[in-house]
Amino acid sequence: MIATELVQQAWGASAQAASGVLAHVIAGEADPKGIDTQGIVSFFAGKVAPILLAVLGVIFIGRASRGEISKVLTSSAIAIVGLAFIAGAATLFFVGDYLIQLIFE
Image (tube, helix red, strand yellow):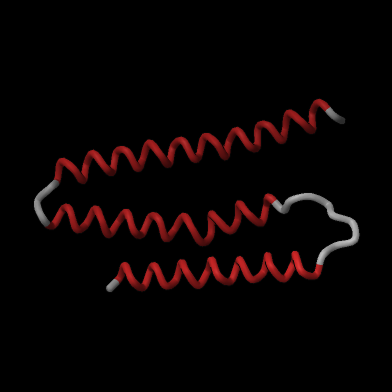
C-alpha cells in the first residue's frame, strides 16, 4: 500500500516537472541562457531523493521483519557509502565552481 502511494507521488511529481519543461520548450526563449542546473539539483534533492530513501527504508524494514538482519546491515552500509559518494560529488561541484571563479576573475 505504501509503495503504491510512493509510486503515485513520484509519478505525479515527474509528470508535473515534465509539463513544466514542455511548457518552457513550447514557449521558447529568444535568447537561450543555458541549462538551469540549480533547478535540476533542487528537483532531485527535493523530490527524487526522499522517495528513494523512503523506498529503501521500506525494503530494510521488510527484510528486518523477516529476520534477515545481516542483509539489512549490509544494504544499510552500502546505502551509507552511496550517500557519502553523492555528498562527495556535491562537494566537488562546489569546489569546481570555486576554482572556475578563482581562475576566470
